[in-house]
Amino acid sequence: MSSDRVNLLGLPRTQLETFVAARLGAKPFRARQLMKWIYRRGAADFSVMSDLKQEFREQLGEIAEIAVPQIVTEQASRDGTRKWMLRMDEVQGIETVYIPEPDRGTLCISSQVGCAMDCTFCATAQQGFNRNLSAAEIVGQVWLAQRELAASRSGGQPEEGRRAITNIVFMGMGEPLANYRNVLPAMHIFLDDLGYDLSRRRVTLSTSGLVPQIYKLAEECNVALAVSLHAPNDELRNELVPINRKHPIAELLAACWHYIDQQNGRSITFEYVMLDGVNDKPDHARQLARLMQGRPAKLNLIPFNVFPGTRYRRSADAAILKFRNILNDHGVIATIRRTRGDDIEAACGQLAGRVTDRTLVRLGTRVSNTPRTPAEVR
Ligand code: SAH
Image (cartoon, rainbow, N blue to C red; front, side, top):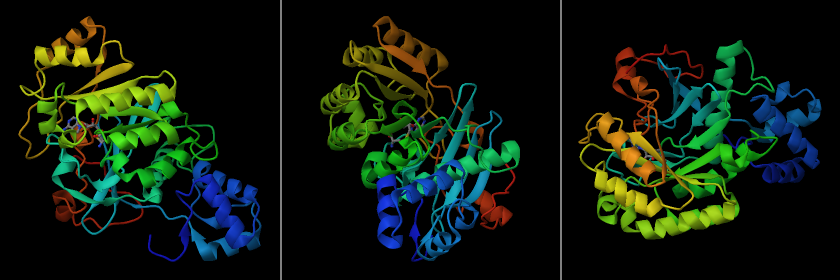
């Protein structure tokens, strides 16, 4: 993505309209035509845009481009989950995961290269924070996944009307609210009917709890919200999710209930990773129930996914079931998240994003634009 041309990918509709007006003297409907080509039909080349005048396409090609990140590897899990690593620089990559289910297809996207939140149980934290993704790099993950999914289904371009991606969740690498500036325009494109045309409840932003940005989001783009709680008291949460020292649980929950008011009645999903002997005792469940009782909240219990170097273990199945039952008995809705894609390290908290990982070095794989690395287990 290194050129003087403006990358149109990731420009929300109003900005694209301003761009074509200011630089090419074109009417707003030209921007709408461009959006249809870029997002609905997955075009990356102005020459295919047959309903735009030849002259306009040529002028556009001189000042603009549609630049998407490069795919380094693709892996496919036994359960149908797919993971792409996208190249960000010589050493760093980001990961995007597609999770097919009978009634939906969820794309799990990243918002940063690495992460600065430093949660003790997350693999992404171990690589530290490198940089924010641009809006183009965030939207580019959806653009690429749509292309790859269409190619493997029909051997062709994405077709209108057949959707592989019905939901988008910011649950990949990074803290999306720490990159608010670029996440917001990306979300506008996900919601725009000329973009990916998803409803607000099909776009979920997951946060470790950046309270001021939760208030901002409530006003500016109130998509579905998931909050990584992971502990029922400040003492434990300070340890597991260090941002809690800045924004403790009471402050975080106040922001959540405010968010719901603005959002008109839907509920917030609280994520709770089940760590053996750390946060999975019956007393933790009772404390958690007291925080959630009578509130528009759903608990999502996530069995811990191991990664190299972690000091934690996954809670026993019996402990997870008991924990859920205590919550349910107190009238709190709780479900257990089914682990997907763990054989390719695509499960929650396993995304590490090293372009030069051992597999690649050993195979001497060349980075290329065409992702034809055989699916394999690291
Ligand atoms: N930074 C955001 C989004 C990314 S993580 C956030 O914190 O919400 C998506 C979810 O996976 C979060 O709830 C995160 O806490 C959880 N997670 C992280 N590491 C995990 C692991 N090793 N096993 C299971 N879940 C994990």
